[in-house]
Image 1 (cartoon, rainbow, N blue to C red):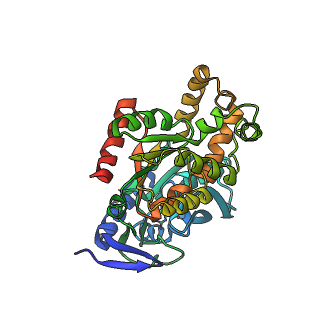
Image 2: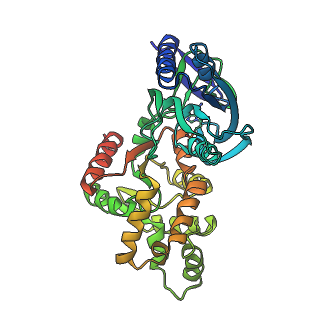
Image 3: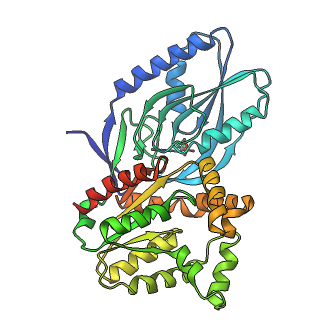
Length: 381
Ligand code: 5GP
């Protein structure tokens, strides 16, 4: 039985034992030393999490090398906030230096991209990236780190420098979070309530239509509802004024619209929520609303597609759809930014409930549907 520990309200079980970590670090140190020997590299540790990895790397180096630190924050509790705040920046000149950025873990890759940008602006001779852990199912960046200790699944981990609310860094093994509310609980709730989630252009509309037919569900897209309102009504004008700029319609309006849509289908076998909830407040309101009807969200299926691909898809869609929010690159960018800052954290809401499933949204429509079917069967079974 794996060793279990608890932090806050979460339970973690041992996932990577200490000796395995130390062996991997030694291996990376040897590779780096072989690649950079004689170059006096400067290692830039990304605080706080990388301190143990960096320390263990240094214990193996025999070459001349130096160390500096930057400190950034992109996580709140167990979720990425989608933005990076710099707490301690770079001070020393990096011109013509060989730099190795050292990360504890690359998740979305936002932190790494931020540091690399800053480093490159200082004209180094060469930049390399070493990370102890990488979450390949989440990281969709084009730049792969030069040295990766271990690939890990999307679940939140602690230990070996990685923390939850500041705790757990002292653990010598790495522990993985176990979902707090298992999916089985929601399976017993009867009506299926599926939140189909993902950035603009990820394929939510297309896939919703397929899921709706296959599983005999009702598809509610708040975007479609807003676009389908009588264009002369006050509500339609108000919604349009936000949507045309790529901004979110305020929560109170969206929640009311959603509730009245759901009430139109009292005998539905289930509902696919497409484009809702888009903020944490909406997610909370949906929970309260469904609870009042004796139900609950069954699962959130998140379609993961990287930003460049989204831009290309939205540009393509604009030609056929005539949607003003698809045509203008500035509006597209704002929609992606709004998604990253306001909407992406909603996934965290469902991750904490153990209801979140991440699905690769790249590939043919059929391939993505198959992945969704596979994940949904587990919920329906
Ligand atoms: P990124 O910017 O790549 O999304 O995230 C990088 C930072 O987020 C890491 O340096 C770390 O502080 C935090 N982080 C990402 N995933 C995890 C995780 O599974 N566990 C912990 N403890 N922190 C993580």
